Image 1 (cartoon, helix red, strand yellow):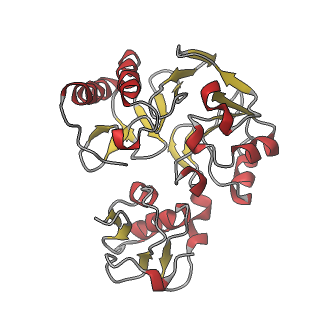
Image 2: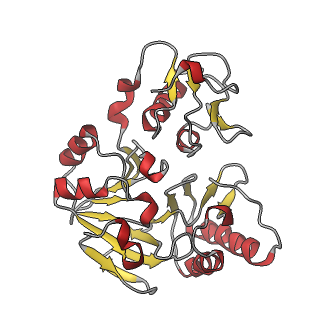
Image 3: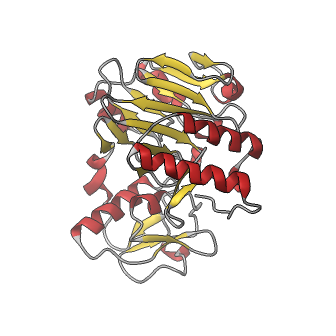
Length: 301
């Protein structure tokens, strides 16, 4: 739990605060950007105390989702008030899991409720609450792992539900007992409506997953490949968090222009929704920026 003795000096006075154990993963800023912000010292902090019941609820969600327990309230711990908000519906049959894991640096994970078997995209912490909620929603059949950084407790969820883990061979050392191992750099139709798009760059075997829900609702789970920047109001990718090969990542981003989708659902950074034509324009702008500008403004998430 957050420690009042370690309060970040940037916090405004009031009920909520962030302490110095924060790892700057961006989880709280994704969930409650009107409450939390990023300091120059690479910490999150409370920029404005909640002023309404709705703002308090989203701040409590951020508190509960924080992977390091770095957010706290001065008074009674009220996290249980929002426990049942997770998994949190994003759109149609896709949910944000919450309960980010420090093993994946607070990476976001997602749940797809599907008639042919439910999917987990990357992994949250293994918690009884999520196990119970997944059970009530029909269990888990598949766990798609975008890359080695965000596997977290995937093995525990796989064992609990008998789910089949899916990962690229070049990331296999992170989940050596994975049941489905992907090969190569060509797109792979795993099942109807589920297309794997290899996107090497951030790591060598990084993959995105395109989930198409007819008639007009496609979601791209991008792992750490690209995300929406709240600060710049544009799609973004950063060489500063590219662990394998930035040139490969730039080429992988450009290949995404071949596909239509309405959602970007990243492991880190902000989710983004737009009509497919607008999304294509945003992606073209990103490709131009990273391919033709001498300097790409650096930003983590």
